[in-house]
Amino acid sequence: MLLKLKGQTAIVTGAASGIGAQTALLLSQEGANLVLVDLNSCGNTLSTIKESREEAAVLECLGDIRDAEFVNAVIARASDTFGELHILINNAGTCSRLNLETMTLDMWDRDMDTNAKAAFLFTQAAVYPHMMDQKYGRIINISSISGLNGGVVSGGSKDGRSGPAYSASKGAIIALTKWVAKELGEHGITCNSVAPGATASAITAGIEYDISDQAIKRIGTPVDIAQAVLYFASPESSYTTGQILKVDGGYSFG
Image (cartoon, rainbow, N blue to C red; front, side):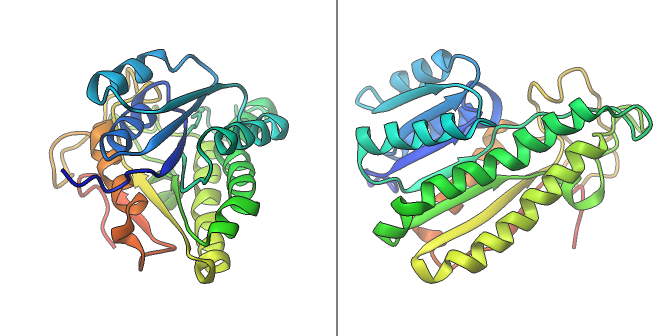
């Protein structure tokens, strides 16, 4: 079987569970070496990958993705272990649901730093010099429909709506995606974003979403998002950059 990503190395942040874990598994099944990054143990993800592809090469890096020293150490370890770095998936994220009145500075900083600052740090460290030197790279940022429409309302009310920090940080990811795409396209490096709608994950646990007006009458799964990421990570997307792919079951159009 022809493996789309055989011999390539992919870094996935937030790889311990949810979208990150499923993305890592799918990329591994396509032949990629995996660098699993998270604050929490990626043991379950690692076991699942090994069960699926026994010969898979996997490196686990645990730490705070908001810390520039940790990010640089991850990139150095990945390079030392696998050589060239081909794919970066900026997936890790946090989501506060406080409204504007009750939002604290600490919660604002947590969402902005985890969702936006970390993506900047990893992108900068992976591109210079690694992707630039090899004239090839695939950067995929996991944003959100909330970054486009100001927050997804759940349960038919504002009670479960993602907060202003989350929406602002995901909007920042979308803008960063487009900026990086324009900067690096001539160097063989693409940058795209997948914007999930309501998706089953730790962030959405316990929240009910009104899907009555949605074209596909269910919420998304991590596998749905991982499949979209695979396209952007693969050679088939070589003429696609700066795009925001909404994977939301038809929640929004246009």
